[in-house]
Length: 365
Image (cartoon, rainbow, N blue to C red):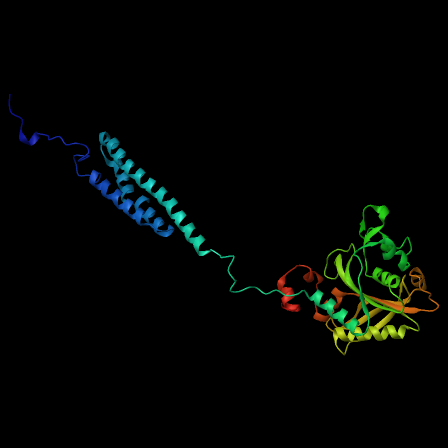
């Protein structure tokens, strides 16, 4: 038997050393080098940016392991399974390392954020935002101080008022429109006849019932009406009212008091005028206008409040003899006064609670 030619002899080689008989990049050493480089880059990643770069370089479409995986399709069929297993195990190892690194970096960055945002709530603050008192509160105090300086008293009364003080004692008829639910907040149960006061006038009646004559009282406080909130109305607002009961008081005393108030509020050049009107609690009655040079649409007279001589029926309700004592009363809205003083066109700015509004018009504290 003839000896086999040396040129035709085949030396067997294990698959884990050389996967193909022809030169191929898919070797154990190539896969091991790519895996080691990937694990090293992932291990060195200390934040999201560096981990993202490592992921792109070693697990992306152009990474060494991805290129080795793509080369499997060019191998002979009997070698693809072993090569696929080798590369697949390496890629799985890299993906596991990436998942662990994701968690590690996430925890580390969260701890860094917590440290950076740590606030010692027991420490004295190095800075603080200064607020301001609301201009309505300041204006009510200013108006109260004006009347105190004139020798008047400041009266107070409940906001949840009995219907007798709010309407009956002030000469409102039983069918007066102000008694309708469309205008007034009535409080259950109905048989108790309680309302959220629609004006501060009940304080006038309470003052006449609780004080000896003569009486000079101004009442400043919150009142309620079922108005829609818009630029010139609000369901909860503030009023100032005054009542003076003495011997010999006339409309001249009323006008002088109101002119003094107007000049204190709007400057020495302020002007007022009285127009005849009707109110159930005064007779004669008048609407008081104030000259508003900054009114929307141009300078004009703007209604500021109502006034008049106290109706004798109101005096009798409080036990005062109208043949011996006379008096005058007036009332106006604090919000409207603030609008006129500060050239404001929208009353809603006063109730939104924006500290910038108070800082602009109020007193910084």
